Amino acid sequence: MGKKQEYKLKNEEYLKELSQKDGIRTLPHGILYEVIKEGTGEGKVSARSIVTCHYRGSLISGKVFDDSWQRGIPEAFRVNELITGFQIALCAMRKGDHWRIHIPYQDGYGTKRDGEIPAFSTLVFEVELFGIG
Image (spheres, rainbow, N blue to C red):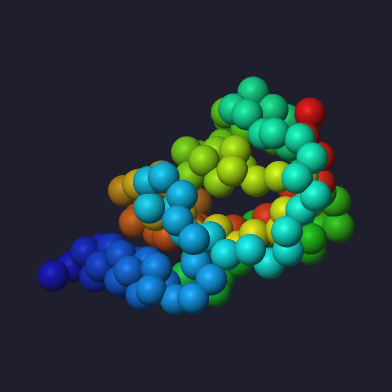
């Protein structure tokens, strides 16, 4: 078994184990999340929304590949321009929600490396949603 296959299996096992833990909820496509803080419920995110949020993206190893908190400035995104897993999670969130989201590789960057993100990576995003426009 090659390194890529081992990494893929490690990521799949991570999600399987995580899905058994208390407090873990499931979205379509096997996306798992945990609520850090509940929002107010104001506003509904759609694919055409522009959202403002803080986020930190990491791998299951804990290696951070992007962090808006570290930059000190929230980011604004049009939801339909993001990876599928992030779109699904954001469309389930409400203003003020703060979640940790675990996205399987199929709805992340897939089977190809993207910069410092290896192929078959489960993406872990901590997201705090401030605004929906």
